[in-house]
Amino acid sequence: MNSLIKFENVSLNFGGVNALTEVSFEVPDNSLFAIIGPNGAGKTSIFNCVSGIYRPTTGVVKIFDEDISNIKPDAIANLGVSRTFQNIELFENMTTLDNILIGAHRHIDYGSVSGLIFSKKTRREEEKARQIAEDIIDFLEIEEYRYSYILSLPYGIQKRIELGRALAMKPKILLLDEPAAGMNNEETEDIARFILDIHEELEITVVLIDHDMNMVMDIATEVIVMDFGKKLFDGDPKEAAKDSSVIEAYLGVSD
Ligand SMILES: Nc1ncnc2c1ncn2[C@@H]1O[C@H](COP(=O)(O)OP(=O)(O)O)[C@@H](O)[C@H]1O
Ligand SMILES: [Mg+2]
Image (cartoon, rainbow, N blue to C red; front, side, top):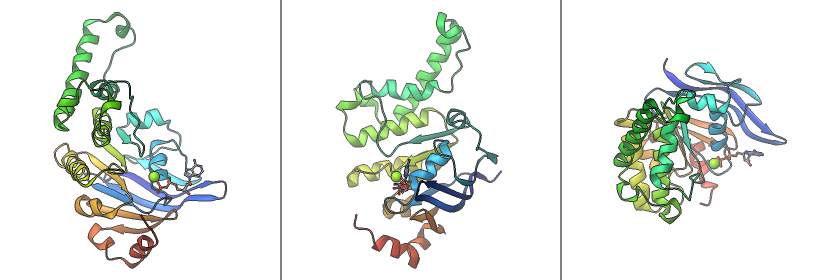
């Protein structure tokens, strides 16, 4: 299997709005795959089709070569697909550690009854989850925020914690929706470095949405450019920057 995600002529319509129009692409194994395009281009809709939150009006989405048309979002996540959201979705009144533990709990096995009676097995599994969470806290360099409540933390750190929760699910594919949105330059450089490390050290295939070309040009191995629900370009990020239709799509955008 060479492609982890495959879109085959996917269209997605909402009433009169064509969020996606006949979009086809493949995310190769081990890639750092970027999806860029102006606001409203259909980027988040692509993620929602991968997660099973939206179902294509026509066309097929495959994950690990399997058609996901009839697979529920939870089961898709269990295939090894984690994501972060454009707007942070953390539990604000919980600590960093607890938020990351929520991700880690997804792939541990309590058995059916043992969770209720706090058996040896439950304790072992709980320790395993805790270890996973601690490793991620080290990896993302957020040790000092371990016991801090989310709402007390700076935005850039919250984004990093959300990344941590997604990583704690031990995904094979990590979907990141505008991880650098709203960040200053320093925070953007930090998050770009962590994304690279996730790709290179943890060997996770990353799909990265951004509306800004800059970070993507530096770190992505492949990019597709979306505009008004259509794919304009697919290939080498360096080539995208030179492509006339891509340049045109971006010239029309003010932000
Ligand atoms: N649930 C929905 N209902 C109606 N329109 C939607 C819905 N989701 C997305 N759209 C529309 O689809 C288009 C693409 O949206 P989206 O995928 O969020 O773009 P992007 O993430 O690139 O900014 C937009 O015109 C948006 O308004
Ligand atoms: Mg979006």
